[in-house]
Image (cartoon, rainbow, N blue to C red; front, side):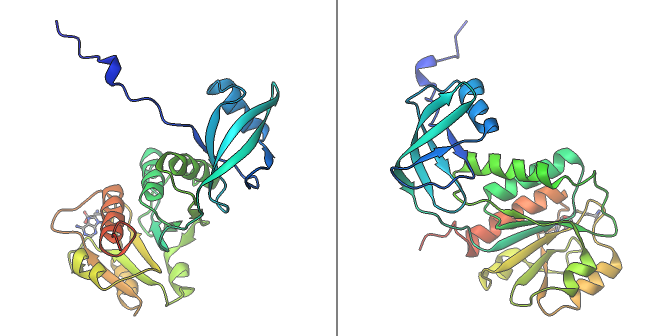
Length: 254
Ligand code: SAH
């Protein structure tokens, strides 16, 4: 029987890349906290002299050398800057939280797809597990590490839809994904759009009639269609953010 495991073709794992809330500047030394030291020394089994990439959501990304201080604590010697700090386009993802695993998926994908802020919005038909902001934060860090972002999305406290709209800054256009099909198609919509902007996706039960009336009454809010098929909320999130980045966000090359 043919052996399909071709070890020589297995790609080398890339350099470990972590987020750390420490000041990073070339030729200085930073001390990692106990949790991160444990991860690098015990879980990843890095050793003295091993290289890794570190970003801190403000100074950029740096090539560092690990220097264990003792068994429980690690120091980073900062060798060189590998990337300048940059922010993703100012596009917010606002969505009605879903069941735990689907919400996890949304938070991860929104980070990969370059949302600048993630806002849990409570709507009439929102049925969600308890919202744990700390868990969401940990997920954004993991997704940013993996996707090579040098910034992290902000996570807002949960907010009711009508309160969100009452305090809305009308310089930011709001695109709500409208499953009724009444909206403009997304390609035409984003052709004339730019950041700052926000995408809103409803819960599995959809928006209520009153919510649609309220949204449609706002001059800054635009009803958008994602085609004839009804998508699951998490699919709508990925589709809408992808269209934004492709048409008017940072997937577009200058
Ligand atoms: N229960 C609703 C569907 C809700 S889908 C129904 O059967 O009609 C969950 C959310 O995904 C919606 O609130 C909307 O924001 C988005 N969505 C799903 N399909 C969409 C489409 N074709 N166009 C625009 N938004 C869509």
